Image 1 (tube, rainbow, N blue to C red):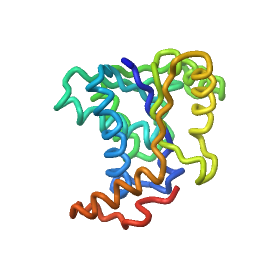
Image 2 (image 1 turned 60 degrees about the horizontal axis):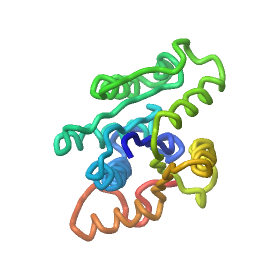
Image 3 (image 1 turned 180 degrees about the vertical axis):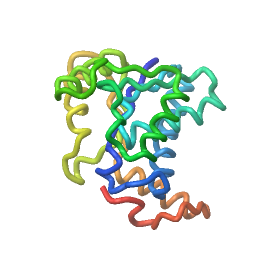
Image 4 (image 1 turned 30 degrees about the horizontal axis):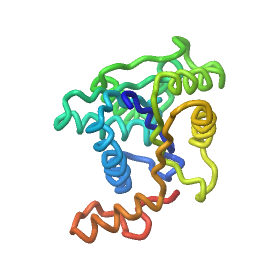
Length: 196
């Protein structure tokens, strides 16, 4: 696998409303843990849609991993021009920092948001350009936006070799418990680092 699409929940779907939330560190660690063996097997690109949440935290994880794996590249492929323009200022700043640090930033549509067709076109392109999907999603906690990309990825998987890797709430909870047992202090309670 050379190109991996990484996406999942948007921050608000996890009740995360700022970059200081304790759960972010655990999500990034869970993504990092999944990426390392893939990089060691030849992964070259982490590709995200760049939405505020798992997408940007995955970019951070990939950027951090470049210190150890300088061959790793990261890209954001947004659905439309200036997706951050209606976000709060701190989120806009964070998004712009990420776009400056990734190896490639682009938008499927050069227009501002004009309809769901742009999101569909983006998802179709991301699936075409990737060899597999890493998704932070837990259906047992209820449906949310990641269900759409998961459904498309599973359809692609039926026709070709397209791995779909999932990070669930249970995976992250295990990481929280493990880290707290080691004395890691991120400030998140062991039983619920964030709400799904």
